[in-house]
Image 1 (cartoon, helix red, strand yellow):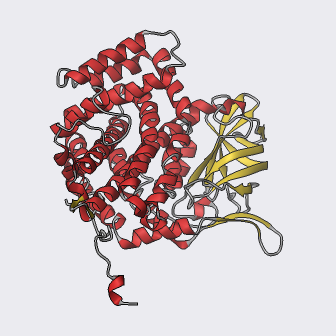
Image 2 (cartoon, helix red, strand yellow):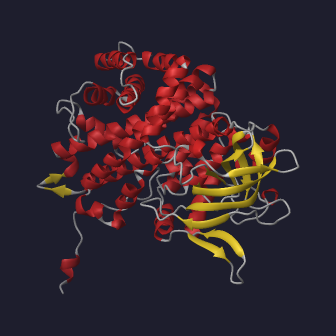
Image 3 (spheres, rainbow, N blue to C red):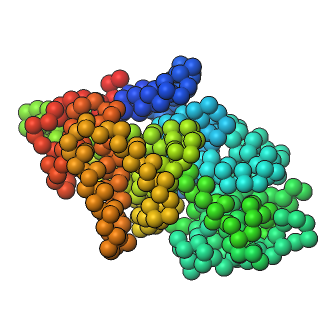
Length: 547
């Protein structure tokens, strides 16, 4: 066979060896905007911290780790060779490298550092683009802190371990480890999202705050972790508990992993079903107030759903633009062809809107004022609903930009597509989020006031945004059939918020495209339907990774 038949032309070079943070203009500008306002003395330190993580994320090594962790999913080892029950999950070494790098980069350490939530959110956004599955234990460990803080004694014992920058694999007493990971167990097979239907029973012991649990958890996140926050029925009602995997004396707690879930995506990560049978637990918060105790953890993981989806959207966009920049067809590079430019520009607008919203929520956590907490009460579930919903169609469209190459596993795009629906389901699916927003609107008027004050900061800057705000207020004033209209209402809440943020902070061409297509009705149902009169070339140029 002639050697010339093997000459490779018109294929893009590998997308490797770049700074995922430094080349993302929307992310970089957002981080510096909020830092400049809250902690300008940290600008240099955080730039270097995130650029270092960005270079690691864009390296061939991290990309290889991500591929291997997904090609070699975790295995459950219920017994050792002698028949002893061990209930351990075995991971490929690449999983441990990804997780170790995440912990070492401070992605479980937000609650005690200056601007901790913003820098941690940006880091989570960046490193998730190397591989998304290991983000589950990272997120759970980070999010456990507010729940544990309802018990100062427990927080003093566990928070330093959770926020440590040291990752140590293996099951040992927590006091013997430099850092620990946490998981969560709320969902049961008979209840699903209705956690108040939980039947796991908690029997008090003689010592104050100690209980034995009996029951089954249908979904237990990160079952290889050192500890778990779970819900169970105590004599006083549904209560939150801390369940360690290994007790202080070194013996294994009763924690039987019955099986690992065979999931659509998220293949590198273990999700399991577990049985509690005389499982020792420590109460967190008061009896009967389990949902209220654990809700801080749920809110923090919901924000990570937003950030994780935004990260997948950005990575999909990056891959699509890179391919179009180097691939030619019909006599021109794809990126130069008007219709492909429209598709890429539309994807870029969606990605920037998601990124900008995620950073705003993280900055609100850092501010910690009553006003910002009220704002988050609506903004987090609304953002979780909308951004995670937009992830799958956007990733699918980006995959199509690569044509048949995008449908091949080696491109990495199929892995992104399989991962894309997860965050819409995890921590409460779309209906749960929409109804949560309605509850906030009905029970917490200060939350709506905080939201309206936020979007009101852009009043008069764009007539389409102003009109959308008026339309939203009309929707909110009409209570007839409000529950059946909840998705429609929450979608508008999220879009108006994104529009307000982009009008204030994004370049004019980005805000104009968003308001025209998402708020003004001048766009279609599919990506690539922006008005042709917009500055599409500038939108695509902003999305490129060329620094």
